[in-house]
Amino acid sequence: MNGPSALATLRKVPVRSAVRWLIVGLIAVATVINYIDRNALAVMWPEIAKEVGATKDDYALLVTVFMLFYAAGQFLFGRLFDMIGTRLGFALSISVWSISIALHSVTHSMLSFSVVRAMLGVSEAGAWPGAVKANAEWFPARERALAQGIFNAGASIGAIVSAPAIAGLYLWLGWRGTFVLVGALGFLWLLPWLFVYRAGPDKHPWVSDAERRLIMEDQTGQQRADAPKVSVRSLLAHRQSWGMLACRFLLDPIWWLFVSWLPIYLAETFGFDIKQIGLFAWVPFVGAMLGSLSGGWLSGRLINAGHGVDRARKLSISLGCVIMAPALLGAVLANQPLFAVLAIAAVLFGFQIAIGNIQTLPGDLFDGRSVGTLAGLGGLAAVAGTLITTWLVPVLTRHSYAPIFILVAALVPLSLVALWWWTGPIHKLDRNDG
Image (cartoon, rainbow, N blue to C red; front, side, top):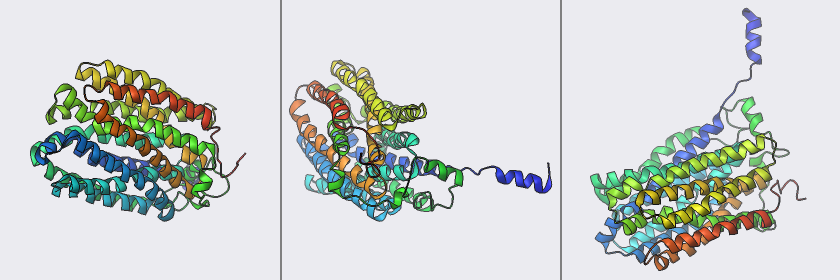
């Protein structure tokens, strides 16, 4: 075959692209940076506390300040992403949080630490509603949980690399120099983001017809990005929204317990210094990374096998909960650091299977300019639950961490009640309210 006939045959072959995976990859890298930034204080806290004369209660106060402003940032950026779009929303969020973490280098008191942690909390919160919104715009339902899993795996990778990386940088530069260096990472990320990202798949010049059809396969009527914005009151008129919020309220404290307190738990329970924390604190987040990818793969596999979105999401979330609860009790019984971090790795494996599917629900329930708002409300609910456990940690861990582990284990079955008996059927509510 040659000449015009060969050329005609080639023209019939559909041109394929994978812009959606490039975008979620960039968002995952942003999440790695996000977690390096937020974990830096926890890893270096044993030494920072000595220099500034701070206590465990002071650290709990800083966690609370961060979480309060993180809650406000979830709602603020959720609405902002729906107003200005994903591209500019992410650029604003990461710019502010990079400046905030660099400013940690000039702090010298609990007041100045509180101010920069507040700035960091507000700005870092933007990554989550932004990711959920990008996911809804760029992925069909059968790929959405996997895309969310890749994004969440970025958080886990950030937690994995942050402990040894921050410990190494601390030994080289001290804590002030470390904060400056990690603050520069976000601005490096901005360059490819602004070059690659455009508005939805219908407007991106790199998206082929084949990829565009795939993204749009479960969409009818208006394009997601052009769908009308639904008010907060209308979003909360549905039981599905409240069920999702309840799941976030009950489960997110488990994640934040280990993100915020794992280095201090290792220091207090096993007498670890910063170098030893760097050697052990990354292990549980390997489990989290594997759970993120496994939960997304499982949900997509169930949908491809013929199960509806409702059943696929609920079965995946339930599996994660079934893994989480006994693993938490295993952490209670662990009396060696290796056994402890392996048990916590199992906890975070199950958590990420569950939470990745919960975080896809705003995109499963609503279209267009409402997804970021509902995702932001979910983050607000998550912070509300986390604040309660944050202030219980210093009270319940005076002698051991067993009481707080048992408490959060009890939240797992409650989340299953919220999922199966409160949430109701998962389907597009702004297309069919039946």
